[in-house]
Length: 415
Image 1: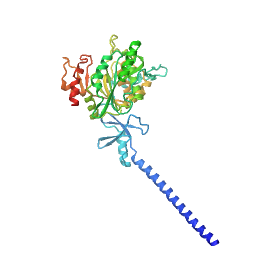
Image 2: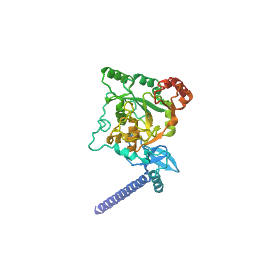
Image 3: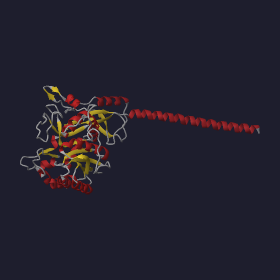
Image 4: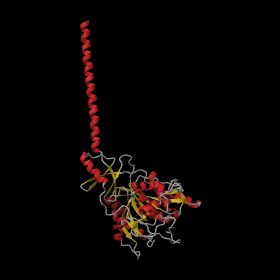
C-alpha cells in the first residue's frame, strides 16, 4: 500500500509540474505578445494633419477626432497621400516617422498666404483688427453669436445620415418662396452625380405674421428642406443666421463638404462636384471670390453701411464675397468655436471670412476660375455656363436668367 501511495504521489507531482510549466509558458507568450503589440503600435503611430489649401499641412493632435472625418496627413517626396482615420494605419519606421513629423510641423511653401497683410502706410493692421474684435470680460455677449442659444421652429433631416457628399446651405428670406422653388426645380433637384449625394437646405429666421408662419410650415412639410431660427429675419441679422447655420450643421448634418449660397445665386451642381473631386478641399480652408483693398462704407444710406464703432479701421482685410463659398466641416467647426469670444459686426461675409477665419486659422483661396460673370447684355454663353460652377451677379443684374438654361445643362450632363 505504501508503494502504491508513493507512485500516486509521484504521478500527481509530475502532473502538477507539467501544469506549472504550461502556465509559465502561456504567461510568457502572452507577455511577449503584448510587448510585440505595443512595439507595432509605436511603429504605426503617425501625425494627424489637415490640409490648408492644396499644399500647406498643419499638425493636429492625436485623438478626439471629430465625426466629420479629419484626415491623416503624410508627406513623401513632396507627394501628399490622404487616408481616413478609420482606415488601417500604414506601418512607419522610427526614421520615417521622424521625417514625416518634420514635414508636418514645417509647413510647405504655399502661393497664397494664410493671412494676407492689411497694409495701411506700410503697417499690417491684421493683429490690431484681431485684437479689436476680442470680447472683453465686461462686455455683453450676444445671445446668438456668442452664446449660441439657437432654437429651431422648423428643422430638416436632409443630411443627418452621413452619406451626403455636398450640402448646399442657402440663406433665404421668408418671403422668397419663388426663389426657393426655382432652386428646387433646377440645381436643387439633382440628388446624386458621380455617385456623390447632394442636398439643399434653406436657412431662415423668425417672422411675426401668423400667415407667414403657416405658409413656411406648409412649405417645410412639403419639401423638408427648411431650417428656421428663433431671432427676427432681417438683413442686419445675417451674422446671426451665419452662426446659426454653423450651429445647425454641427448638430444636424454629417456632410463632407459645404457650399454656402445666397438664394439668388445659380450653381451648376455637376461642375461644383467635379471641382471638389479634382481639388479635394479639406481641413481649414474656404474657397471663395476674394476681394482685396476694399474700404468700409460709411454711407448711412447704404445696405453695406459699417459704422466706425463696429469697424474703426480705414481698410478691410482681404475677404470672401458672401454670395457663395465652398468650405469644410473642420472650418465651420473651428469658426463656430471662436465665435464665442468675438464681438459681432453687421457685414457677415467680413465677419466670417476675416474675424472668425483669422482666429480659427482658416485659409482663404480664390476660386474665380470656376465663376461665370453676369454679362452686361444678360446673354450667357451656354458653353461657359456649362463649363463653370457658379454665376456671380453682384448687382442682381441677371437675376433668374441663368436658371433658364437649366434644362439644357441637365440634359447635356445626364445624357
